[in-house]
Amino acid sequence: MEVFILVFSFLILIAIGVPIAWSIGISSICTMLVSIPSIPAFTTVAQRMATGLDSFSLLAIPFFVLAGQIMNRGGIAKRLINFAKSLVGAMPGGLAHVNIIAAMLFGAISGSAVAAASALGSMLGKTMEEEGYTKEFSAAINVTSSTTGLVIPPSNILIVYSLASGGVSIAALFLAGYIPGILTGLLLMIVSAFWSKYRKFPAGAKSTLKEIIRAFVAALPSLFLLFVVIGGIVAGIFTATEASAVAVLYCLVLTFIYKEVSMRDLPNIFLGSVSTTAIVMLLIGTSMSMSWIMAYENIPQNITEFMLSISDNKYVILFIINILLLFVGVFMDMTPAVLIFTPIFLPVVTNLGMDPTHFGIVMVLNLCIGLCTPPVGAVLFVGVGIAGTTIQKVIRPLLPLFIAMLISLIIVTYVPALSLWLPRLFGF
Image (cartoon, rainbow, N blue to C red; front, side, top):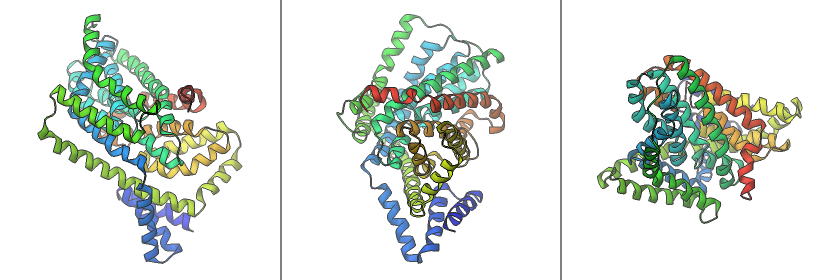
């Protein structure tokens, strides 16, 4: 009975347009009201929300969000674009490759797909249009490539997965994301090259070695942030949370050196980061309350038993889970999806011998596809809005890029070494 109320109320609230965080919270309260009186029900949900947010690891999220906001305004994206352009601008569909590589670099530094889509779309969109690319193609490239930064560390969503999984090493997850994220970017580049050749999009001028070195030197301080953050975590110099604070300080110093941000800009940057953090934290709080209720009702255990009764073949179960997560990603934002479905699916895959670090990468890579699909694809709406086009027109160039992301997901799912080689190399 309680399971039916939880699922039914949540779906009804989503269907009538209630924001996802409120839908999760209200459906959690409705479920508790069936079992206990109203005051204890409200108190329990509130306590679980507060307890879910009481985590030192979660402090990394507002810091990484702030670092992303500073980078978005501080000229870092422009330098990364110039560096990427010097490397691949002369290839067929050169600016498309520039967008993908810049998104991988910027997304990896900022940890935000929306920030990457916003920054790169604003800077590259008009240039691509002037050079003969269609708005729809440039938007499709921007939307799909921006999600690679959620897998390539540092990544806020991998921190959320660590919390939901009960303590999988953040350092291991960060290291595990490199190869799958780069693989996804390479597959997107292959598709964009074929599409550009088919549509006869232009290639840019070839850069000289001197121009490449000059662009690399200009981007080097920005790229060095990756070594500071990830290197510090892997070497055990500081935790992921401490690394996020170091990232903020480094970005502030860098943007003041670049003279792209002044003291007068800081209040707006702080306000934007607070607004984004508040949304994320509300989602985390309500999702943690729903996860607790599902555990209280033994839903994860029942689902584990049911799925293992279907098959004890790991590959079949992983296929089913991927299909379910692809469906979930279409209708649910990534953060609540990770918090709600990790406790459900993780016991299933660990019973079959799958490494929790590998599953985390598979789950995040899977849900990245949902960010590019309506009706709740935040990155899709940002990319389309910046390009000044419509979702209907973007769908056609998006489809081959979706296929590239799906191929990457399949490879990463069934080849665990791609995710686990680096963590094991560093002893995680």
